[in-house]
Image (cartoon, rainbow, N blue to C red; front, side):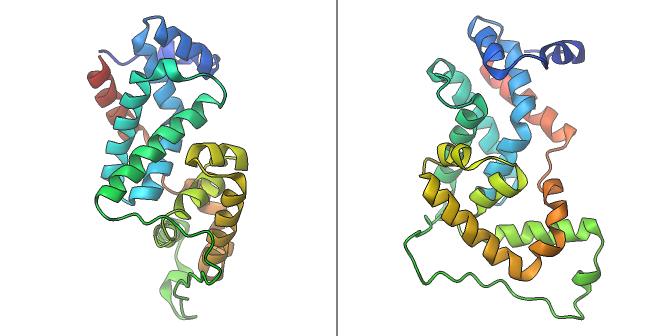
Amino acid sequence: MRIVSAAVLEEWTVLPDEAVVARVLDGQVALFEILMRRHNERLYRAARAIVRDEAEAEDVMQQAYVNAYAHLRQFDGRASFATWLTRIAVNEAISRARKRGRYESFDDQDPAFQRVLPMPSANNPERQAFDCEMRVILESAIDALPDGLREVFMLRSVEGLNTAEMASSLSVSEDVVKTRLSRARAALRRQLFDRVGATAGQSFTFLRPRCDRVVGAVLARIG
């Protein structure tokens, strides 16, 4: 299946997700590419927060898109398409991480939670690093957060989802989302988040070559 041309992509960018979904269900399968390109970065960041590996995050994305396409008629519009898609990716990522024994559900009732990240010394050269180096440090700090906190922090502080969207995407209550987000921020703040928070939106970016690779792989599978 060919990737949609740039002209077609531009023409369809004005249409909401639901309209594109309707066309895909009507047989215009190639237009599924538009949905992937719109949501690739969000899905990558959500998956990357859980599996903590770039290559595996891409695998998660591909499978999530294939699953979404296979069950596209089950999308009922009660949540946004982006939220529905993110939930599929989150479930796929958590399932893979658990199979590898690399994911332990966070205990929201644990009053003794204290996640202490090592504090850099005043002479640590990382404190004078350029923005690109600080981005690497921030990504490492996020990776160090416990399972359950990483994805909440990523979806809110990096991707910009609101509480309701996160709760729906992660299949937890809004109160749980608020608690986990507060704990994640507290764990990061002591070390570096106040210093490099301005660059958080640049973290875990999903650049064009990677985007093209995922889109091409998924279209080949669903085609």
